[in-house]
Amino acid sequence: MLAGHFVSGSKNSEFFFEVLKVMRTIDDRIVHALNTTVPTASFSGKVDATQTCKELYESLMEVHLSRDKAIKSCITETSAVVGQLRAKRAKDIDNLSVIKQLRKEQTKLKLMQSELNVEEVVNDRSLKVFNERCRIHYTPPKIK
Image (cartoon, rainbow, N blue to C red; front, side, top):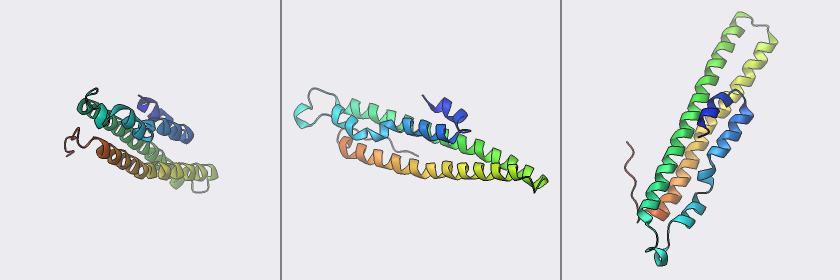
């Protein structure tokens, strides 16, 4: 999916957030996906709700894992850059361009770290909606 482009995009924070937005599309449209794929009681004979819910759950988990890995990879990459810039600043305390770049990278790192919290909220919301609609059709395995 887009996760491969994600790491290379972590150098550009605008690209980082744009890719993240695209990767969250399934979560943004979870209600619509459930309404169009999980049948109501009157249409339950026409569609295999168990299989449909299982497939939707698996795709949600795949996307959640992919985004989590991508965000953490970008955080690791940006943390390394911050570490290098701190080392440069320690050697040359008066270099304003290094100080400016360090602040910029630290800000980007904080934004990426806050995205992990956003990710948790997005995932919880999606799973709540999924469980409300699919709980009678499919019970996901317990996550260890």
